[in-house]
Length: 400
Image (cartoon, rainbow, N blue to C red; front, side, top):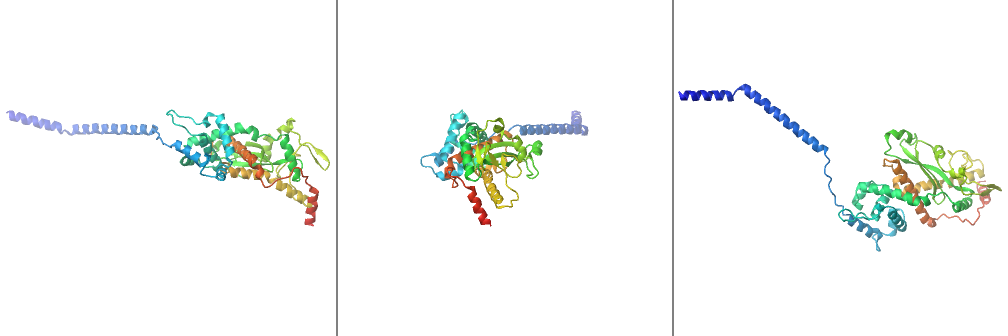
């Protein structure tokens, strides 16, 4: 009897264990559990991907970078010569050291400081060298990391503060308007070249803006350039010194539109310009003039060439005017050759930064001109008068 009861219990347990309905319910429960686990894993992965990854610390060994730079250029027995320094820094060493000293007095950023661990930071020489390499070679910021051991963001910061410091500390002198002594010298040189009363030549240059905001491209793009540009109006003399610089006008304008916004004649209109008196054919004039190309208006302040000269005198005048007007073109060419950042497209987003870069390059250009002016091969004797009539007679005899 007991055996029969045990058999019935076993059979009942077997039926309960292998019930198909129970198995189906259990399968549904297992499937729901698996779905919940998979959804939880996906949420964890998404959360982990949204969280910023831990930045890897790169030991650039900046102490060795400082020592290597000083050993290459700034020690008593440097590796590279003064000629190599001048070619790579676009200036002589004493000018660069003067800039480093004044910028160090201007901002604590250009002084060597220690971090929270007591380690020395980048030296002023290294920061100014990084900025000059960016200006002179137009290279990307991360390209300097291998040689100077400075990160990309730090190089951009160095360049931004460097050009701002150059403009604030040197702009008052090297972006000045001509003084009475300057005008007297320019008038003497102009008379020696056959143009009494000439103060220089004027023209405009375009600088392509690669990262111009899309909403602004219409006003910064001109049909003949096809790309957004920013214009620079400049006046240069025979030694390529830039006496006037006006930058920031959208590239869709032309030379006349820029002239309407430029402060070129502000001092004359206000009556505060230094006197510039000269005599031509017995007539006394009290305002100098600039050599310009054909697009400029017919103002007394501009002397343009003769488009179709028909006489020997007209041909001589056109030849001399077109040759002397190239002074500003030469200045633009040398400016872009010295600072390749102006030759390529501008990669900064902020227009104020581009303005600081342009004016800083012009200031550095004038500093180099002031330092190397005496070494130019072309000189004019200010004390020796220029006889234009003798040259006209010589030209007429040669063409007859």
